[in-house]
Image (cartoon, rainbow, N blue to C red; front, side):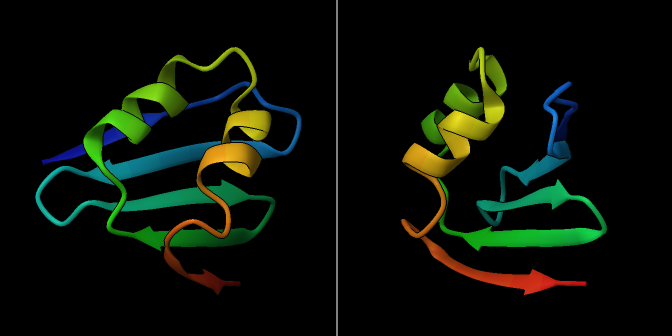
Length: 70
């Protein structure tokens, strides 16, 4: 199952999370940052964060295997 989150962030335009594969995609400008193995509680924290960008930088970026797509 895929869940969406639209952040209202100044630089993150949205995100998706697949609960089956634990793959999270974060949309930054025209790029997609895909993270593999993100636990559901981290996704929940991202969705509920007051600052999605700050949460992403502190808890997701560099913590999981990832790829950037343009």
